[in-house]
Length: 240
Image 1 (cartoon, helix red, strand yellow):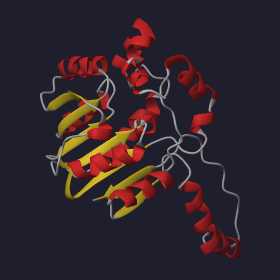
Image 2 (image 1 turned 45 degrees about the vertical axis):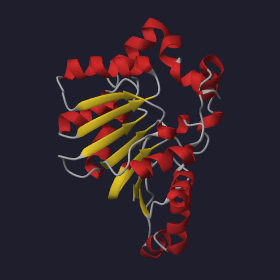
Image 3 (image 1 turned 180 degrees about the vertical axis):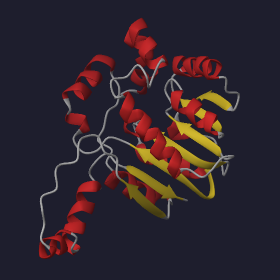
């Protein structure tokens, strides 16, 4: 899909959509999940003060949360009107440690400047996700790291996703950890770690005998769980 769809997305949503975007996460039906995600991401980041690159930040609510925690934030988005919302959110939250920039994260012009970076549900909008990861790799200092939280396998076939693509011309892709890790290793990241991102209730665990428990936590069970996790929407931490 064309990047023009991403640039025009907020305008095409209309006034109601703009209000929703400005008031996220509290305006969103998934508010609880967003807040839980932010808690997890902040727990994974280095402690402030640190310089943080927030990629595809949208209306900037995430950037303001990071700033309130004490990070020096560069909030990047491809759409000028989203960056305007970032600046409005800066005033609302009373933060001065957010610099909002309009740019394409596939061609960032930063080199060894950031202690950490975050893709929060934004990398899956890339035309060239490998180029985006390469640009972030260049932007990070040695030993710095990237945290991603992206939709897993099946996202692109979701009816709501298909509607968004059809109505607004935006790019929507599956972006499971398996793909993120593979491309990140290709561009130079040296190691990764996976953290669970839960969106639904955990099923009741049946009673297990000692033998059954040993079987459950055995090598094959661990490998099966890991394989599934690499296809699902989970947090990935990648070190330069």
